[in-house]
Structures are given as structure tokens and as C-alpha cells.
Amino acid sequence: MSRLLRFIPDGGSLVEVTCRTIHSRLLLRPGLSLNEIIIGALARSKRLYGVRLISFSFVSNHFHLLLDVDNACQLARFMGHFNSKLAKEVGRLTGWREKIFGRRYQAILVSSEEAAQIERLAYVLSHGAKEGLVDSPQHWPGVHAVRAMLGEEELKGYWFDRTKEYAARHRREKFDRLKYATQETLTLDPLPCWKHLADEERQRRVAALVAEIEKQAAARREETGNASLGADAILRQEILIASPATRSDRRRPSATRRARTGDNCCVPPTSNSLLPFVRPPNASRRETVTSGFRREAFRRHYLSWVASSIHFIRPHPPGVRRSAQRPEVHVEVYLTGYRHVRSS
Image (cartoon, rainbow, N blue to C red):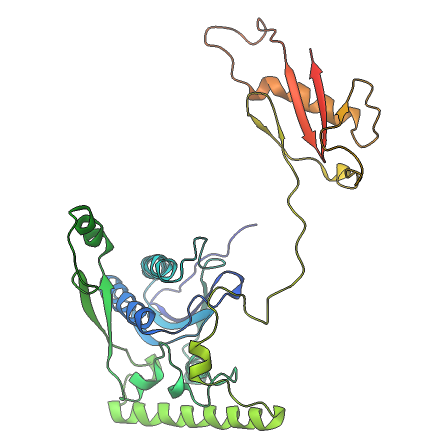
């Protein structure tokens, strides 16, 4: 499947970036160490690639960034640097050994209209409250831009140099957690349509947006009768489980088995036409099927295709032409629990 192009119009644009963890697992659950790492990585990436960071919110299974970028190359390099560092650090903290993000980040252009820009800013700021997790975005225990945009918080984090830590461990040097860390300060840029406003006026408008978000969240709680989860419960959530909205208790069927030759050369998996023919529960797993192909499950054309494909897979000895080589082929094909042995 083809990928969407990363298009940024000439002159730059405001972009809303979304990135979600694999299976919507709670790998980004707030915590002191992770919060410092996220802010440090954002600040370092912003300083290296020169993007303008307007706002952001990191909830337990995804994050949003509101960026002002010059071109698609600048956006791609910034996101590659930031996501790479974040994925490594999250895996290090949680012990999750697979990929961290389910797919590439999604970048959506935001028009230059003031109403559109304010609407996207309000959406990013509403995270934490709109899901019913906390009463107000200001109560979110993780990384969130709302407190900094209101002038209540200075965003400071750390960039950890794991290369230097690795070298120190090889020298058997004992060091504390922050010896090879650099403190980074993250600064926010104004919304493009608010650049002409003073800092106090921008803070007043952000406060109005937050008040409206809190009002909508309270109305939603009153309508559903559900209280917010609360910061303490969020910090106690299990990290490696999938989000309840996407988790499924039903196991998926295992992948189709592959066939192997005696030289451990892989051939393509079984075709879909053979999937209905499964091993009977009372049949031996190593049951031998002889030259008559007595079992209907094994179609003659399939095994013939496997045997005829061997000479394309097996390497030829150097100096010997393919037409002159007549090797004896011994094929063992394992399909749906049976074995067919054929020599030629």
C-alpha cells in the first residue's frame, strides 16, 4: 500500500502531528522520568531543526504536536529525530522490546484562517479532560503545554547521552543518573494568528479556551454520571496492556506455516486453497504421505510446484552451468501437520 505524501505548501504551514503507540498500549503513561525525557527530546529536536512548537499534549497511548514548519523536509527530520529518541527511551523504561509506534506519524495541514488555528489549538489542549481522565487539562500528570501557555510552568527536561553512558560502563565507571545528561529548556512559539498579540493577551485567550474545555468536560460527566479517573489512578495504570477501546480478548489465528527444503531454503507459504485442509485431531503430526498423494489435502500441482521451484532457490556450484547440473533433489514439505518426502 502506498504512503501519503508529506506535502507542505510553499512558505510553510501550521501542521497538527499525531502519533499513536502500537496497539494503543499505555507506553507513554506519565511518570517523572518519562516527562523529563519527553521535554528534553522535544527541546533538543526543536533547537536542531528550527521548527516552531506551538502546543503539545502527551497522553498514555498517543501524542499531538502543533507545529509551524517551513517545508516537508524540516518536518520529517524533526519527527525522525524526536520519535527515534522517544522510542528508544520508552523501550528502555518499560522493557517493551517491540516497536513503540504503530505506524508513521500523521501530519494534517491547518489553514491560515484564525478560526481553524484556534480550533486545533483547543483540540490539542483538551486532551486529558475530553476523555474523562481528569477534570481539567491543568490536572494532567504528564507532559502538557497548557500550564506553560498560561505562564504557570517552565518546561525543563533532560537529554540523556546513552553513548557516553555505554562507554562509561565499559570503563566500569560508576555514575549517577544525570552525569551524562544535559538539561534542556523548551520554549513555545505563538500561534501564527496570535503573533501580533502581547504575551498577557495570549495567556488570557488560552485561559478562556481552558475554561470552555472544563465546562464541556463537566457537562459530559454530568450527562454520563461518570466521575473522572483522576491523576493517581492514571499513574497506577498498567503500562503494557492495550487501551480498553482497542483491546480484543479474541486470539487471532496463527500465520500459515512455511515449507522448507533440506538446505533450509524458504519457499513461499501455503496457498489459501490449502487452508481448509487441516490436520485431523486424531492424526499423527509426522504422518507420511507417499507418492500416491492419497490425501486430498495435498494437491498434486502444489507439491509439483514446490519441487520445480527448488532449482531456482538452491545455489549452483561455481563453474557449473544450470543445464549441465542434474542434482538429486530431496524435498521435505511440511504443510498443515503432514510430511511428503520425494526424491528425484
